[in-house]
Length: 203
Ligand code: MG
Image (cartoon, rainbow, N blue to C red):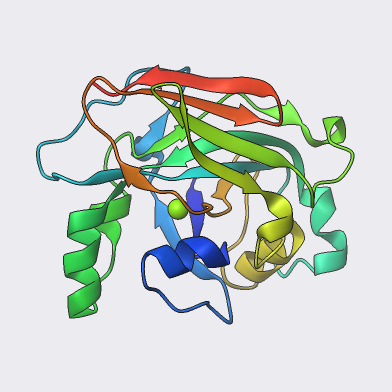
């Protein structure tokens, strides 16, 4: 499986990092070795002094497809989860300044924390889902999918014009504002609506 992630999909987050609002989705990928599941702890790597949390809604691709039209995109995912796109912001900043790719900042081991998945049918409106991240009990990031620049369906359609989606692939759909550094000892709790699905520590 592969992990595809969308950058700058919430305008207020793009602004907080002084990035332009994109006209087309910004795409990057993480390898399967980035996956962190079952609320296992995230071990802070030595190569960065500024690892940020990015809470995001994650789609799980339910069948293979390419050149998927937006109209049929809902047929290609049945379940969603909450995840954290851990980002080495210091490395990313250096690479951005030089126009270099982001892999070392985004694709490192355990950089894609994902909760258990829930059926999308549980949600009355996928374009109005609340999600949030608490760090040490304090609300740190609050998002709602109505604020996405590019919808789930548009993302699936767009990505599949370039990259064949396969069953089991994951798509991180972007983070709202409030990204910040994580520290050893922090407790991260992620909510999809009122259900707590992520609860783990930085070690
Ligand atoms: Mg992200």
